Image (cartoon, rainbow, N blue to C red):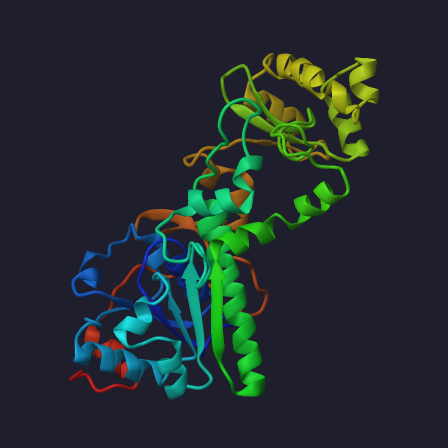
Length: 364
């Protein structure tokens, strides 16, 4: 069954991290995505390059007149172009927004960078950790003592980067179908990560959030919203925010400590209460606690590792993970009832077939 983006033609200038992930999201949902690789790049793709799944790759030398002309001929047939180079690189290659939009006025030109297309840092190198540091988000993650915790590259590259680029691209595509005019989507990880923090900025303005780590109700400061070690060294995640869920947690854990039961929101007592719960949760293994609490409104879940997550009954029932060419990986998401997405294999494809699919003669 075709996905919801069937008919959308996307050119992806191959890069690292967020731009390929954005292209993967579009391909999973049925878009006809063509990944442009440097010479030799497609040959290096293998089944482990999960974010390159579901779309063919065409090698082009954009520094050569022939390679550039082939790219521009593809642009003539595209709805979207996505690139993740530093500002000015595509212009120097001869395929910047002005050039492409002059040829294809309805083109949506998606640009993914860390710092954005302008500003004093726009030409500086950087990575996820730098971008989320500048946004204010990194300082909020981790223990009170010591440095902030690095949250993989999920927050900047994929959350504030690729997801926001995909959202911006699709918003611009919808507008272009009404106006007939394309535009540039300037997606910066600093902007996107700041946007992900919108709720915390509201809490901070109202006096309900501090700049100290582990001092707030969603950052591990509250005893009812944090991870606890169990007897076997594994962890459970407790998220009993609401009073009724907290009361059920107390009840099912057999806690008769009146202060712990009744003073949930006494902020000054949170460290002390966390210590009491930490001692309790160390009396049983993670699976023993899950047998008692998981699936109830006590809001408790096991902290699973990469091997365990695909085997969990809920994830298995939902098909959250799939195996493609022997590689376990996340399935396409979100779920659409009538035109669901689908995760395809990593398959560079044949050059002649790719060009014909885009209406170009194979001699190119």
